[in-house]
Amino acid sequence: MTIQNNELRLLPWSGPDGQPCYLSTENNGGYLSRVADNTEALQLEVAAELGEHALEVLSDWQNWPNELRLLVTDMAGALRDVHRVAISRGHRLPLTGPPAYEGGDEGLQPPAAAFG
Image 1 (tube, rainbow, N blue to C red):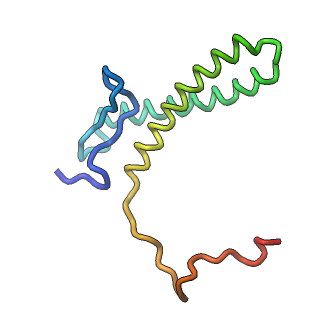
Image 2 (cartoon, rainbow, N blue to C red; image 1 turned 180 degrees about the vertical axis):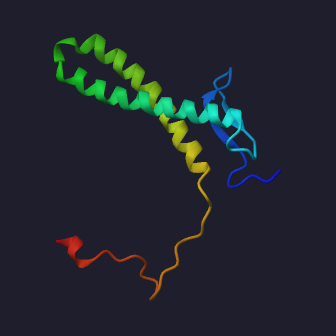
């Protein structure tokens, strides 16, 4: 079996003891990969909706104690999920070396206009 990049995909859910779950497959379009992709998309959508809801809750300060407690609990879970998605997707990025620069060791140089 030849797997690109990191050998295992971090799945967007935890195991029974809260431990990470991984998938080892050459078939990125397989059933479990598609379930993981759909779960990641849903988790990202929930996080975006919670961000919008947070703005609404923060604008209505009279309901803060109870609403904030619930909001922070939900956002902590969403942040955990989004973090797991980011790690999983980052691990699947192609491995590349540092970019080659022409003209010396100074690296990328922003245009003078960038400094006003």
